[in-house]
Image (cartoon, rainbow, N blue to C red; front, side, top):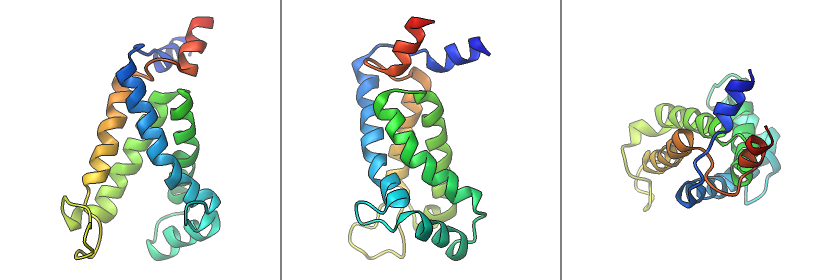
Length: 151
């Protein structure tokens, strides 16, 4: 178990990986805050759960996990805490988004409102940043780094 945790926390102290981690965390945080707290024009937890379960027909565990991953995962990414785990979780969330709602609308986002939904280009960017973190770790100035130094 200790070896697994060390592997999960290992990071390459590179500023580029820190930029990827911080960018991903800062971009995802408002989405999670919308869904959980109703901030940034969002509807909050209850309405988000209702929308995902009633309108989209998803089992309640799916929106619960999406909300928790987007909110707490983004905070942990900003702090550099278990970044590989949260990056993998976001990859799962955004793969799910692509296959359930975006694939049918093509590649491009709906910039001009002339599509019936959003394309998957944004999701691919999120997945790309998350893959960078998954492969390389949190980068510099992270809680992961502090934990591994103490072990």
